[in-house]
Length: 377
Image (cartoon, rainbow, N blue to C red; front, side):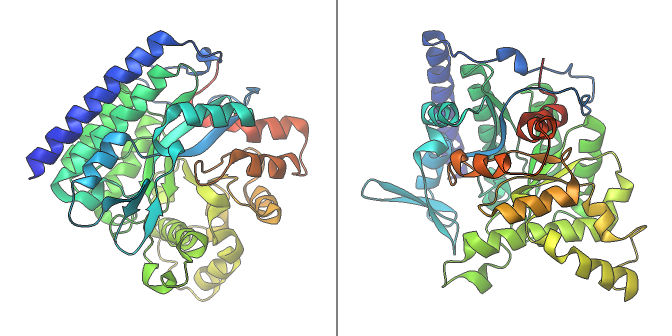
């Protein structure tokens, strides 16, 4: 059964590749193709200088490729997909979502970008991630990463990508990370805040932090079907609260684990303005520094580690984005939309309202992302 699914998904992915290449030959997109600066494979990427890149870069925009959806439709256990009339649902167990056109229709995504004045989007898969699929995990990681790479070629200058990894199979994950960075030009790793119930700070995943630091690429921490799902189900609070506490818990664990001291040159991005941690960080400081609870791996207060984290601007609440700006400063805050769940036009007015200089606003809109991901002329 696994072999059949893998073959089906691989054949579908090859079909998408052929269609994308044909599409690329038929159209020419008016965009700054030179923005994608490919680093030599043997050279680790490091943040570029603070020279301004006058672009609007969306650093959080998600996909569910058609081959992945086709694969989910063949499954009889969660995660799976099913149709109800014209609507396709993704069921991860206790959380069900609707697939939207912007997940797999790249023309639709580009139209949204153009309408919002977005020059370039950093694509990443939505959850469920490879760790949810057992032996099929490595195949699905390759499917996702190949698909994203195909879109960067089909739409020159409009997309860059974050890869996903089958972290439950370490050898396969190590191989896929090197392939994604060196062969597919991926600009970072989308790291799920919980890995089918496991935490990213657990010892078996520490190799990823070291390898990402050596490669000079960031880890973009992103929620999955949350560890708090039992507490939020029944009231439809998964998106509002469950996802935010997923990253909050994961980032707090990473901070108190000592990983940030062991890998000081690694950049971690926490989306959604840091989840709830910016508002709880004083309590974490007090618990660790005063009451000495969980402080054994710390060399400074958790709030000082938090100021090393990069945030994105995905929040509908202007005060939350302003507080995120206060926490990490204008050099570590990046514009993002969370498309297709959120329309970019909801986020742009919030960024426009931030109390910063125009130079700092340009950093938030694109300069910081260009520096972090190695983009720009």
